Structure formats: structure tokens, C-alpha cells
Amino acid sequence: MDKSDKISENLKKIIQMSESSEREVSDCLHRQHYDFAHKIVPYIIVECFDDLIAGTEDDSAQKWFHQIWQDNGHTLLSSYSVVIYPEFSFLKISDEIGVGYFVMPAPRNRGEVVYGSIVFLIDAESPSTWLRRYYTLELGLPLIPTADLPAALQESNPTTYWVLGEWDNYKHLNHGRFDLEPKLSNFISASVQEAQKNRR
Image 1: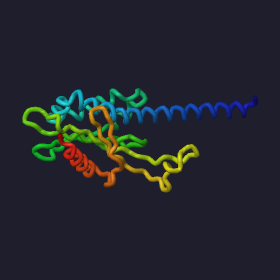
Image 2 (image 1 turned 30 degrees about the horizontal axis):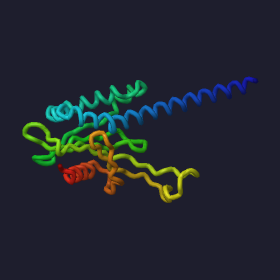
Image 3 (image 1 turned 180 degrees about the horizontal axis):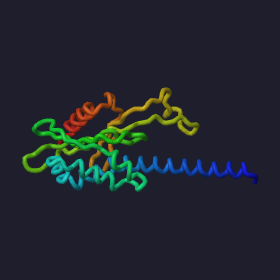
Image 4 (image 1 turned 90 degrees about the vertical axis):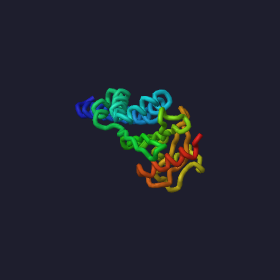
């Protein structure tokens, strides 16, 4: 093997290492984003709802969620997680209804969430269980046409779209495409309307 072949071989190894590292970081970003919105928040709503409500009252919920975001990210993402994280806020819709909502870091992959909302009933004592719903606005991406994919599933004009999701305890429900402009105000309005339809 001459000198140019060795250089070429070493360059290939370096490129492969770089591609592998980029894929690993990308996978870690997806996992952190997906797990936070689809696993951690549903768990908090089911198991720690009183703590969440207390956090909206004294404004500590944002710090709590930021810490959870950092703690559940891969070590590769430690610098990223300090400065890029979900923003959590509270909005009182009426005397009865409160909404805790997330603005997530920009989604990049199918199923990742741009907004999340927790719609709940405001009680004099503690939040009732009749209205405690969690909604997500998730990135939908068209299926990439392949020879293996049936023609019926392939879109003629593939476009990116948004999906309204809901969590009922730990079960994910898909409400289909979100037809409104994907703005936070539209999402919160749709979440509250959906929750009121499901009022127990």
C-alpha cells in the first residue's frame, strides 16, 4: 500500500467516525425530545400532578422541568441541554380552566413535539380528575416513497404536516392532522376545546 492509499484509507476512517458521531448525537437529541414529551410529562401528570400544580402557583415548575430535561439527556448533550430546553408557562383561561403549556425546542423528526398543553380544572381545594388532559402538537412527515411501500400509502405531493395528539394516562391517542396554522394560540384553543368535549 503506497502513501496515497494510506492517506485515503485514513480519511475514510475519519469521515466514518464523524458520520457515526453525528448520527449518535442526532439519535440522542431525538431520544431526549421524544422521551420528555411522550414519557416524562405523561408520568408527571399521572403521578405528580399536585407537585406540578404547586409549581405553577409559585413559578418553580419551569426550573423543575429544566432540571428534568437536563437530567434525562445523554451526556453528549450536556452543553446543549443547559441552553436549549422546553419553556413552560401557565395560562388561566377562565375561573374554571387552567393550562400549563410547553414550547419545545424545534422538532426535527416525526413524532417530536413543538407544543404541549396540560388542561385542567381549577378547584378551590385540589384539581379534579374530570378535566386533566395532556395534548401535543407533533411533527408529521410524509412517508418517503420506496419500492416496499404500497402505492396507497405513498403521497403524490408529500408535505410536512402537524398532528394533534392526546395522552390519556399512558395511552397515546392520535386526533389526526392539525388543520389550523401551527401557532401556539391555535394549539391552546384546540386543546381546551378538545378537553371540554371530553369533560367527564
